[in-house]
Amino acid sequence: MNQIIHFKIKRQEGPGARSYWEEFKVPYAPGHNVISALMEIRENPVNVQGKRVVPVVWDCNCMEEVCGACSMIINGLPRQACATLVDDLDQPIVLEPLTKFPLVRDLVVDRSKMFNALTKVKSWISLDGTWDVHRHAPLMSPSVQSLRYLFSRCMTCGCCMEACPQYHSESEFVGPAPLGQVMMHNVHPTGEYDKPDRLHTLMAPGGITDCGNAQNCVKVCPKDIPLTDAIAELGRQTTVQWLRDLFVK
Ligand code: SF4
Image 1 (tube, rainbow, N blue to C red):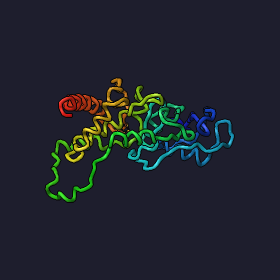
Image 2 (cartoon, rainbow, N blue to C red; image 1 turned 135 degrees about the vertical axis):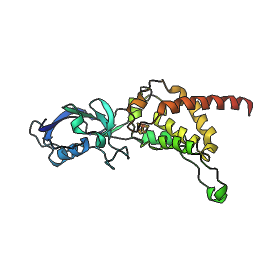
Image 3 (cartoon, rainbow, N blue to C red; image 1 turned 90 degrees about the vertical axis):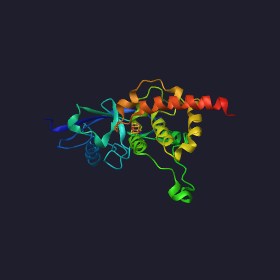
Image 4 (cartoon, protein in one colour; image 1 turned 90 degrees about the horizontal axis):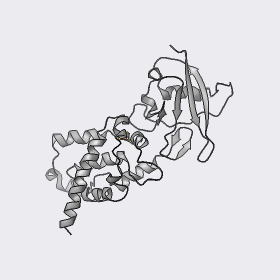
């Protein structure tokens, strides 16, 4: 058992600055996850050369794999730092920021692009007026509830976007996470009213046909969200919408 935890961290002071690697060793204690070990570095930011440096910057919030804020690349894989146990990792533990989002500093990135994509695909259910219909509002079957629950677990962590080869700074592709959310809202009895708008967005450049079927997204999703099932179903829904558009002008 290692009595130290050895980190190799990719650092960068800000956008456009030169990146560099810095190594740290912190005392081992059982039960550390990556964030709690990073907290040790923050408390005593001395690198392996014995030099006191500016503490490493990272993002975190809930510490229970719900908020999605602590996504980073850990030993080559995008994952949640709060839910990744040090005991399960080879050392040195290599930490890098996600590469598909603009870097803010060290391990912090700006995931706004993903949130903007959710807006673009109308990732919401228009609630206005539902109180007027009261008991006459459409019911949701248990099977639809179960299906929606699968997709509702998305925490917009961005791991699927990081793993997707089609999602990058030069591409318009909305990415897998927003597609999962379209799936969730399109099957909702009230959300279905905006289904044609969502599908038309997915039929435009940057939509469903930009998916290259690499299937990396579903492999890295920490919540096991069936993203490839959603993509297949949305392919069917957009085809039906295209046919409808031919006949309904
Ligand atoms: Fe993260 Fe999974 Fe949501 Fe993608 S679908 S943002 S990997 S929780």
